[in-house]
Image 1 (cartoon, rainbow, N blue to C red):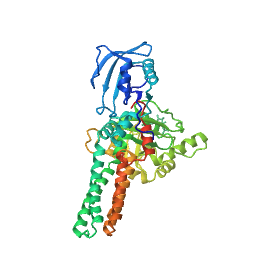
Image 2 (cartoon, rainbow, N blue to C red):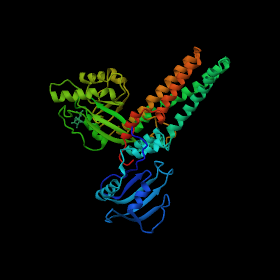
Image 3 (spheres, protein in one colour):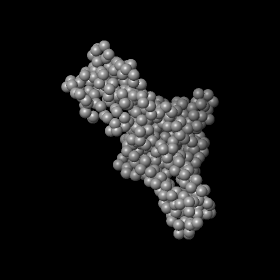
Image 4 (cartoon, protein in one colour):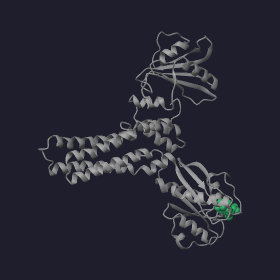
Length: 457
Ligand code: GDP
């Protein structure tokens, strides 16, 4: 990766388009000097005071007036990147921003790559990698819950926990390495017990953090919910009722939803992705058969399947077929058409957790929403959470590896393996933890992470 260069970078920090204000950000050694070349403050100054906003005008090389602006210089190290940063607040029109940007690039600055400001903040040690990822997540958040998880990570919540684990492992490593250096002082039984005890505490704390992943992931990414059932039981009506609008076509002819329809909405602060599927049944229609195949294909990746049946009719073979297709999955039976006279459930259906609703009258929908959310997150809606959550798959994988290495260390201590071997396991655990916070993250992964950013961040 092309890192830490002497180049001064520039990029629009606000989205390109019409807006009240457009902000152009510069970072690097030449930032202040470049500003001075084109900016005439209303009240002339010999040197800008850091972090103070100046009003004035910007002119190009031919003294053509480009815009009336506000400008601020933020000298290192008290800036986002820990380099000299300048922000130009101009009028938020595409042409205005573009002309100023062109002027700055023509004067020798380089257009920043996506995430390059944050990359510099990371490389200059102002934030660690997990914090930088919190910044991306915050920008991308589409729900309250995703926002709070991202904020917590950006503010170093996760990092502090990881550093605590790291310190614990470093302490163990110091003990083990002292052993290697002074082999004549054998680990006695008490030493070994103490090390094991400290390791046990660490492992259980790691397990605790790992166990937050399901909730964390859901708060960050949302729940994926699949609506399944044979044709005509009211799947599309249910989706519409949940969304409160007519997105899916509802008809009385079985098999109208030939493909899958996906909708996103926020429930109790948690994003839901809800998919209405083609009725799962045997069909000769090739288009519908494709829909059915896609519906089935989604079963393994859904967090929650809502299996819809028509409560007014006896269960059919098709209903049983759908149930068996969902074997082993997280299933909630939705007995629809509660407004009609009901037929008792039979067989394996009677034993399923269920909610009785009417997509027509809205009866039971509130209970259904609450049941979905509380099944995953208990009673918490995600707001006001204090505890640290693991929400990113990359972090989870690294933590699982660290936990595994610690497990190997334990086994090795118990069979009284030589100190050199013990320290290999501990170093492996440190390496994995460092991938979360960025100390040991391979460059290609870093590149992938920062490429996810937008330009100007
Ligand atoms: P899908 O094929 O499973 O998506 O079913 P639809 O949502 O298209 O509904 C099939 C038929 O059942 C339509 O005529 C709906 O009006 C009707 N329907 C859906 N929900 C209810 C309900 O709660 N009560 C009653 N009485 N009819 C319903």
